[in-house]
Image 1 (cartoon, rainbow, N blue to C red):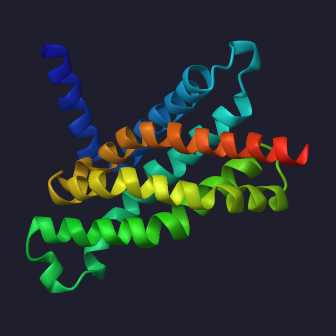
Image 2: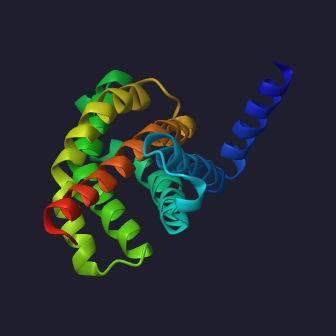
Image 3: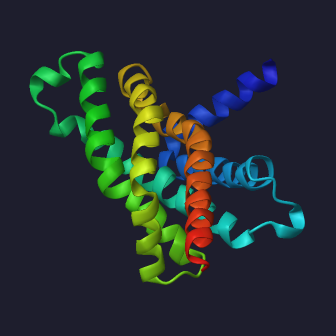
Length: 195
């Protein structure tokens, strides 16, 4: 228990002193772990069939986007809300959740995830675009199912310095989910077209 308390204290100090670096390191670790979990546990791949390029793409995306971009973007949400929506933490949480799930995720996050991870895996822009179009709708719907309640809690109750940690922890589950959808859609398309 004492070790856990010390670890949490060191993490809180890291968030206070170097929030960007701390959030990026957290997102890297959880993003990489989520792809390993997805490939080995969810998809049942053997280590000899492990897709290391995919792991690198997911880890880099998680580090840069979840740890970096979200660290800078999340504090901006409140600026876009009318004063009435900032009157209480719950109202601000509802407003920020709407911004995150109606604008940020479907317009920026999901397309960036599909396009960047596919291109980092060596796919062409056209193939990445087709993969995005193929998986977009199911990804947006599954995103809303998970993130609307989680982000409502995150933006309403969680102190601002810990919001990217909650994102990264939820992101572990989410990346497994989106990673699996992405691969499932790829296999589904390959089965129907033979490519």
